[in-house]
Length: 171
Picture 1: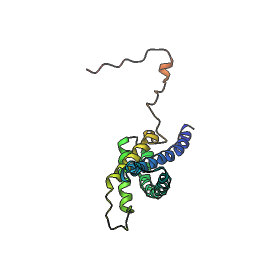
Picture 2 (picture 1 turned 180 degrees about the vertical axis):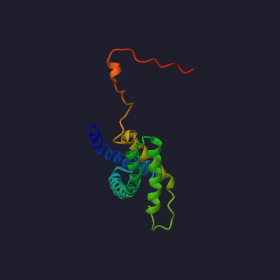
Picture 3 (picture 1 turned 60 degrees about the horizontal axis):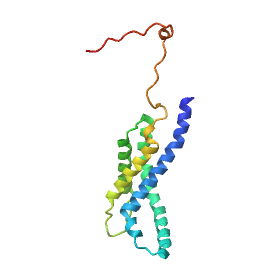
Picture 4 (picture 1 turned 90 degrees about the horizontal axis):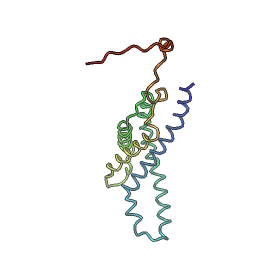
């Protein structure tokens, strides 16, 4: 029964972790590659709403690219859930590798004459997305493996009231 409840909890936590990872990746792209801070500096209030509309449309388009990244990352997520891999290094590298593979499969700007020079930001977005996923769902991956140390079983000898056997010191 405990395994069933843990499986149901994982079915809720993993998609939420993916959503948080997607938002983290989008923030890195918007702040890093699009240089959102420089873009917002010195914008008059009237033009701010037009800029906000353009950024929301661009974020919607980037969501498609991030979805491809997380579709590739799902392979690593399934591996982590199946084998209870809880390492933050695994999840951040999974995010970075999946972001790189997604940009190789679907280049962000394939029709422009200027080559895409934002691979550093793509890898940064993958690292941030993988770390955000680990913080929400990856640190306790694996629905069948409990957290912490298992409790020791009580033997009939322990119930009788006699003292437990002494273990000689290693020396």
